[in-house]
Image 1: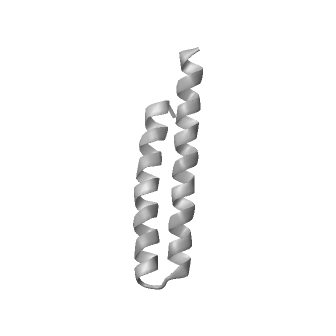
Image 2: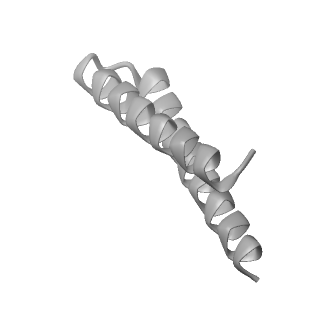
Length: 59
């Protein structure tokens, strides 16, 4: 995948993860809340991956 695709996937995971976290918190569902936090971390990792790809392509 390219830089743009990685960053787009990252944004999707961050948004979906935040929604899961908030819904889990609102319903006292610790498992869903933790899943949301993990998905947000995955999004952050994808964002970094996209940034690295962009930096490498700029060389």
